[in-house]
Length: 223
Image (cartoon, rainbow, N blue to C red):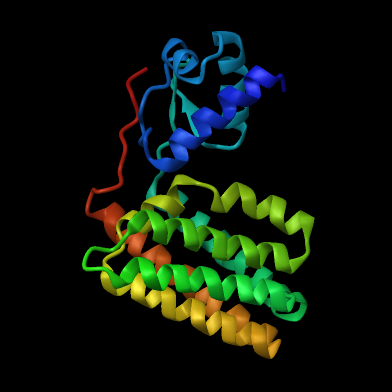
């Protein structure tokens, strides 16, 4: 991929993952090129890569738009994430260094600070939550697992789930992170696996509730 295409890819991907480009939003090459500061050719290359990652889709007339998700897509994505992240947690419990466990503790303290205010600092929660899970994947010590998880975790689902958490949900997430840290300090792989599986399943129900209420749906554009 050329340097210009990489710039376009990172820009468009970032806009999708941040929610700035919502599900079903049309992706017009000229506007994307102007926003990324590149020509339309690298934008086309970037869109092909994003299509391969299932972040964008095309209509019958080949117009690109941000991928929409069905209830089945959501359920499958979270089921895969639960299996893979619980396996990562089990590996991490046996391999995490003291420095990595300290990093997990630091990020969870960041989450505690983000939810302590009268209004939850959602951006800080999301940043520390993402970093917390990234440390676990790193501690698992498997490039193959990290690559597979990258295509599942770095999806709009994860961000949009967090955006629809209420205070009780973020407090529960923080408490579950504490349990994971305790499992890592004990080196208990099965404890870590069980906590992570439950953690992801709870996140699924938070997302699914919002999806079914219509807060997260996007409509596919006409061909």
